[in-house]
Length: 201
Image 1: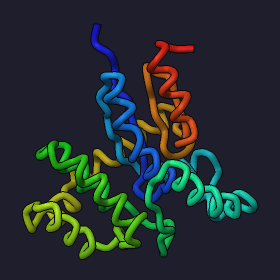
Image 2 (image 1 turned 90 degrees about the vertical axis):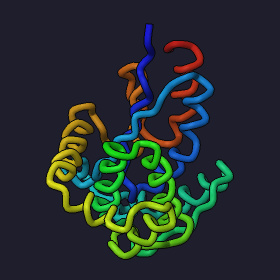
Image 3 (image 1 turned 180 degrees about the vertical axis):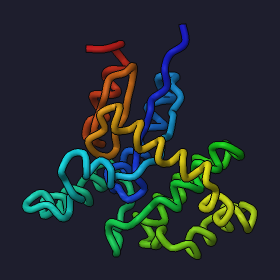
Image 4 (image 1 turned 120 degrees about the vertical axis):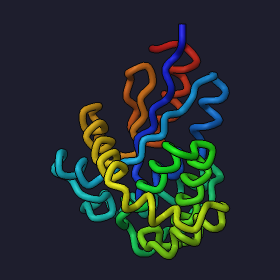
């Protein structure tokens, strides 16, 4: 009987999604699961939950400024808090969707490249010249970013991803589904792994 993949909903602006993205592949491989990477935007989630970016919330924002770099150190993952933060990531997400459609072998490397550019090198991935530079570094054709960011079908897919995330109950990033079971946050990775180990609990 085929097993379902780990569905990983994320926004490139989420530091916790970045941290989780550095761990989830090893977990998936250990338990013979594929990963379905679903880029989306947190704006609709904030609207649905009546919330706003974590760093803009009283008390939680102060805590996050301590917790994010501490969590990175705990996971032995490089992290530099970027400025500006957060930022618009729909262009980077559109490029990922385009690669998923046409060049799937390039999609996950692009995902990791964008996360690393923003959260370890403080490169502004909201800016098209930065995305063009990242595409060139990955050896992608020169028109990749322009073609994918302007494609109406890709724009529609990103919106569909956001709608799907809300339908699945996404309340923040990262949001992962395993066997229809939701896990929210990098701190839930141990529970997700236990679920995979035991078949549920």
